Amino acid sequence: MTNSLVPPAGPQRVLALAQLANSVGDGAFYVTSALYFTHVVGLDPARVGLGLTLAWGVGSLAGVPLGRLADRRGPRGTAVLLALATGLAVASFLVVRGFWPFVAAAVVYATAQSGLAAARQALLAGLVPAGERTGLLAHLQSTLNAGLAVGAGLGGLALHAGTKAAYLGVFALDAVSFLLCAGVLLRLPAVTPSGVVKGPVKGAAAGLGVLRDRPYVVVAALNTVLLLRMPLLSLGLPLWIAERTAAPTWVVSALFVLNTGAVMAFQVRMARGVRGLATAVRAVRRSGWVMLGACAVFALSAQGSAGVAVGVLVVGSVLLVVAEMGQSAGSWQVSFDLAPAERVGEYQGFFGTGVTVARTAGPLVLTTLLVGWGPVGWLVLGAATVAASYAMGPATRAAARRASGRGANGVACAR
Image 1 (tube, rainbow, N blue to C red):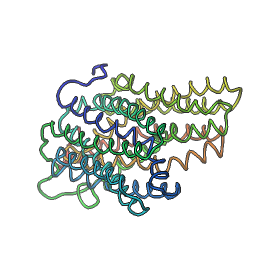
Image 2: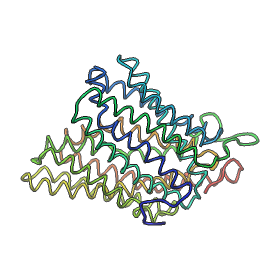
Image 3: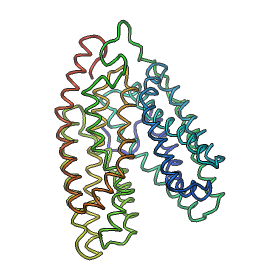
Image 4: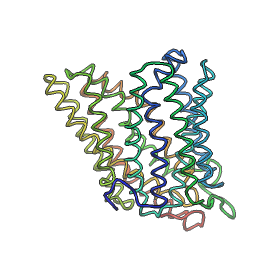
């Protein structure tokens, strides 16, 4: 696995270009959307939060059937259509001015985004050998962070201008970025649909689909617990710094830049040693201990002067990003290796709902633990992470045994 920040030429580089195309627009969207919906559309902030929660709730449920569609109809065509749908949903935000039109547009946006993520994973699985997937996902994560950083800078210019035209320009940029993403994805070779299983379908391939694969469901649930770290930089740490430490609030921005830059520079290297289920489980377990260390350090930042608090927060943030990169690499490998070869889109669609659940439930959990419980809350969060990371071992082994059974029955083959 190369240390280069640029993936090898061919499908891997094209997938990275597609990732870069829409992540720039997304970065601009993320930093401006809240003010756009409140200041330009004129919605109450509480209603914006409610609408987005409803939208992402629907989107998380849509990930599995849209992933299944990618398996059965072909992931490239499905991904292109969903990228176009996402772009059209963003464009519709330019004209909506009421709550329910906003909710409808947000539902389409969240649904298309969730389905696009699943279809892209199925496309990646069809184009990239199993041994190279985690490395490519590390490249894509680095590319994502680079694009988000550029987009956030452009969004910052719009925020500085503060005009309606500037906000509309950002949303138009995001819409165009998804159209560019669709065009880039068309440059990839088509992948033959593999989700049609001949003969009688049994077990996990019937009825509720992936939900009947209970070991995989357990693995996905444990990964969701580990993903509770995701709202830390955007919500948990800002509230902690403002409410519980003497550090200045500008440190929030510095820690975000630190996190983004570290992922861009080191995610590929961190993923280099993850080659199979055993190494993936070890990576997740190590990341759990590092996350516990980060939580303990963050808890200490409540003590001391502003200078001391800033130094402690920087150390905690370094540990946090190391834990994040290790956990990401391990979970990518696990999610692919435990999925049936012909149903990667469906399984990835389900595994990806953990991100939505973490982003939806995470704010409430983190607010309660960190702001409400203080330093003890940090230790509880760290302990929960260690417990989930250690439980991943037996859960993964159980899922691997089930995958081997599917292979023996001719329904699916474990990788």
